[in-house]
Image 1 (cartoon, rainbow, N blue to C red):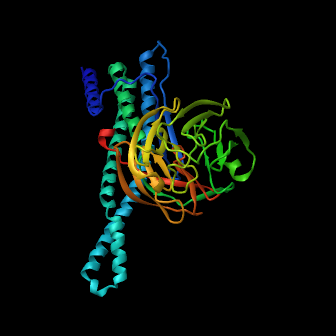
Image 2 (image 1 turned 180 degrees about the horizontal axis):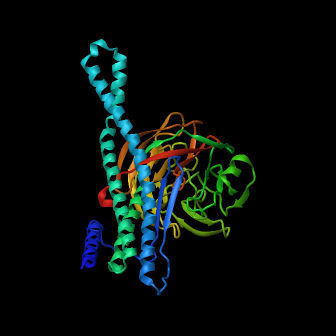
Image 3 (image 1 turned 135 degrees about the vertical axis):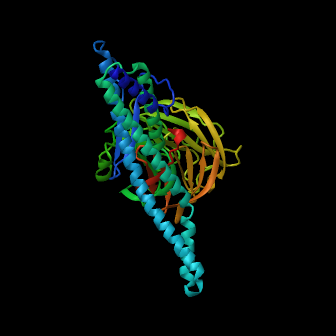
Length: 455
């Protein structure tokens, strides 16, 4: 009787544990990918995949052991997420103290303004106005940190219960247990996917990689390249050139002139090329044709006209250079940014199928393309700079997720005074730029908020 009561208690405990887990029907071929950064900024990744077969002999024991291993792997992912969240939380809490201190100083200045110099008063007031919008953001971030801790505790409890079940077989139906563990895995995957994207809040100072080529050009790496493939692709000029250089690694690109040359079947137009999953996508010179050229076969695998798109300097960026059609990649895939007569020369954003080059969906904006310095996509949002020379900033953002735009103010250091190419690489989480014959990198800061309904 005592043993039966203990088994019933364990069943109740497990039932309570899974009250917050939503039902789902995951496929057997699922995989969980998670990514975060450690304290030194390095990427930490975890992959969990089920075994494709199970031994019939002593099946229940092995199945429960596999479930335990899956949850332990999820625990490691949660620990990485928790470390990152706690580190960020410490940063924002420190910033919050500074904000509160500034607010106190501001009140003191207002109360004793006659005893303070006018210049000091204005400086403090300006700083306070700049930082005041961050206060509600900090409050929301602290709440999200608590949510991650709760999620971590739930996985730890699940690990403990599974360990007990492994010792006492037959305490719970395996199929139901498997489904609930899969549900938890799905929630973890959604959480990690949210960490991969966010809103642009800052751009670092430029890092000059190399000085070479003419005033205009483009360079890039493949965001879908296999692990260990760090090839760099280099294209000098914006027209009447067909040759693409391939460097074996970033180190080779920085330190040597050893490269392989690929000859394209047509010259390109502008600097809006992109390498994606082993192919280069470019705008054929003096046309609105987009070409997909496969480096593996050295042949065109697809070409298609981008209907209504302006070309041949009809709707270029402010710097010119036949930059009518700008191809780019973000976390969501392949995009084309251009302008049309129908949209009065304002920017049009189109999501493209990378295999067929067909337009999946388009968005029309109210921003004149000729007034834009350059633009780039991050997490489905197009960010536009206010110029290409001198003082530059990112000042316009259009979200394709909500079909809305806003004016922003993100500092962007234009070190060499002429930007002719600016593209985001989602794998590196960095901006690649061609700045007056200099190949430059910028790190970006993305802010994201994980809400309970997203877990």
